[in-house]
Image (cartoon, rainbow, N blue to C red; front, top):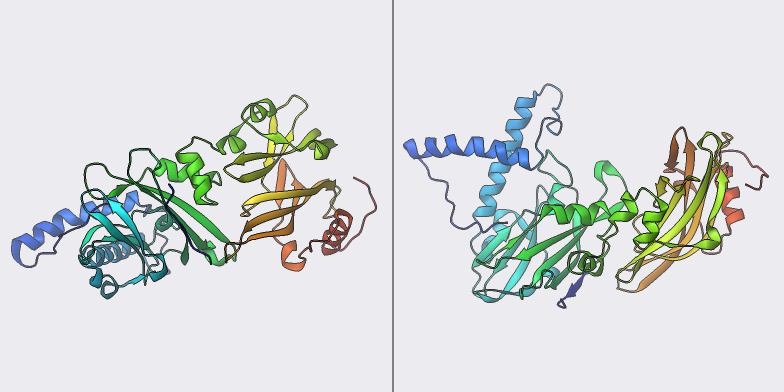
Length: 396
């Protein structure tokens, strides 16, 4: 995976010691356990997340997670020198060590490292002589699976240093690429922003910013995150607008040659409205199904994890699975950045099946049929119908 560093643009955990012996140890334990319960609840270690194994109660599982977290924190907090990172169970990502200016310290090294057992990412900031002046694991990528310590395998996809809040200090954009949860094959990106503190060495996060970055697909690149955080552009309205009028007012550009009315059985007559919204140098592609009164009833996001719509080849509304209801087939060319930083353009498709009260994205056909760059819409419709064991001659 190509890693990019861009210069355009927690908490300091020093000195906590686990004292031993006598009343002091008992007092610390008395304070620590309730605090751990509160902290784990904040991190998502709730009842629904603490699923018990056969023969294990929720209390047992909760105690196990708390013990794991306490042991992990002790190792993290024990790192006070650069040389202590790996001996405490963290694997340094050597290719991602970069210099950054920290107020009061000058240039220090940002050292990312994944904890070997739980796959949690920590960022260490070290001076030239190896002293760790700040460290944090309070990162969005560490909260992919709530309620457990172990997280999916992730790589660092991009690191960028930019002054996002225009305070004269370099902030950090961090994007990780994580493996699919529960054994799924798909890889997805997780974006995060760390703002450099004004009063002390360190960084802070705003979870609301990270939530919107990832909820509304603005985690594709450092440029998109910058456009959102620093410049005020956002794709949120693409997912929340209630009417076509609102979409147009906020910048959606309709693709008129593919915009048509279709009758979808009991759903009635709907306008199929494909459109794009440009943020930074990316075109985000969406399709809306709009009532005759102009209300957005359904929204489709066929672009998936691609970075950009390169060209829309066609939208076809036909029955694909043989249930007598019109489905929606989308064929387009999308672009993304390859492993060596080059622009990659490829054709891909999506099938949305009409179901009671809405549409459902196909998750099976692509395992059996991958389209080529030369495929036509007619060929695609025929191939997808073959998957369901039939062929129809309707024109849609």
